[in-house]
Image (cartoon, rainbow, N blue to C red):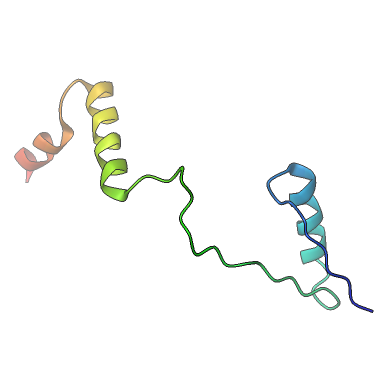
Length: 72
């Protein structure tokens, strides 16, 4: 007998069920759908790096990249 189930792994209960099923690898074969599209909430890498540098500059009060270049 085979059973096909869709489990919402974005909830704590769903993640718990998936973890439990993964323990039974002799009788359970899990397949995960491929995500080909990038979620809308994702940012481009360059934008994320700029934000990190800006946060570091705000925290320390100066641009750390300039300090790094002076040391090298």
